[in-house]
Image (cartoon, rainbow, N blue to C red):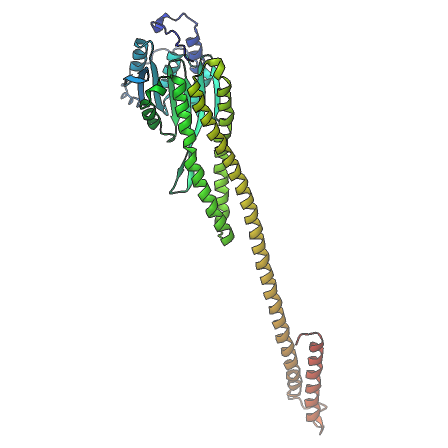
Length: 390
């Protein structure tokens, strides 16, 4: 990527049916046939122009900034006037018109432009001729809600340009630009050095996330053994974040190894090779930590489920024991109620005021009634005692 490609002197010089018109046809919907002119009507108010998404654009020569264009058109013109310069254009959620303008100027492949428009891509590295297209997933840890926020970054790296298209708050590319401008000997190495700095910033941004997640897992372990009822939800949410984190970090390992495999073919500077290998080591370490986090959360979820089951079993056992004790008390109450009901029944029968009752005129009637009450009560007591109701 070190050889600068020749730029056309003017855009109108491209022949009909050229590559630029081909990608325009691929990315622009077919035009509808012209209709008959409508009768004149009251002209609507002009729509407000879409605000530009350019964050910062600069031209560099020999590692030093030589121009800071305010618009894309100025950037294109300045780059044509600087044969040995390099353009670094930073965009944030650009509209389709700006991406089409960049694609036309730098001959970007329509598939890469389409990916940059749609976003929500997995991390990947594609080479289209002399242009690299890199998709990165940046991450940052938010302390207040204790969650991980993910951003998406698309990078186009050509012989004399670097274009970054950012979807999300992370990473802070202004800090990357400031760092590179303070190291002109590194920036002098060209677009590949800028790509290294961006990769390094994204990977370094994973370190606070790893620390924050580690703290969350430590807190979750404490909550699990403390029996916090809300911990299951927190485990699930953090597990989902680790799935996203794993999707962001794992493909980076293969991407960086692919870059390193092309060192010899594309003549990458030796010092830059060392820097990229260092980034690859950090990515590998981060990816291993994320894999360990996922496994740890899976184990914690299993332990939590076991503890919850044990707690539920203990509660069910306690309820069963309480029900058993209650049944024993009911047995005792029922037994004594039956014993006391027997003399009441006998007394009720003999308390009826009928004239013709056999025992009313009998001299042993009263002792007989009392004895009958006693026999019934003792008999019931013996029966309930043998059944362990008393």
